[in-house]
Amino acid sequence: MYRWVKRGVIALAIVAGIGFLLWQMNNDQQVVRLHGHSYHISVMRTQDELARGLSGSDNLPTDRAMVFAFPRDNKWAIWMKDMKYPIDIVWLDANKNVVHLVKSAQPSSYPETDFKPDVNARYVIELPSGTIERTGIIIGDPAGLPSDI
Image (cartoon, rainbow, N blue to C red; front, side):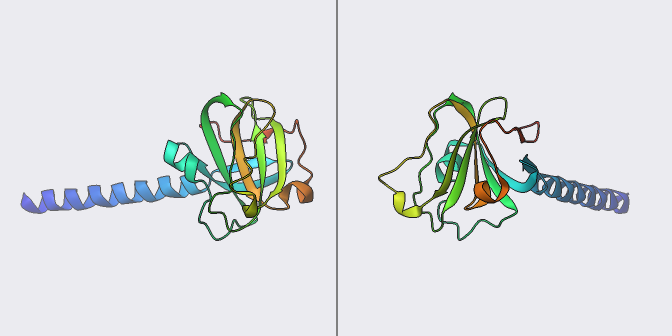
């Protein structure tokens, strides 16, 4: 009987490990689609994540983006604290449409400048600098975010 229990525990551990790996692969595969281009995303939701963002990171590859999912609509400000490179910033309303853009926000703008929209937004997308210009993102563009964001 001990052998069967041991085999059951091992099988359960293997199944749980495979489940975790599949979940992790799925989580890493979340994308945002914006003006005909797709970007693998990291989603910031907690207060600490929202405050930290890309601060301290070394770069943002051209196929990646960071999405800030705020709990409510507001004129959310983005700062460049501890940033090492410029980024493009896109604000979306609750319907996931572009409502404001900032091209090439510079690290040297901190602490004097907070970037924020003139209208309420629910989401913010940070992209590599030059993305807005290169891809032609404009106010009113819909963003294809996963439904759970």
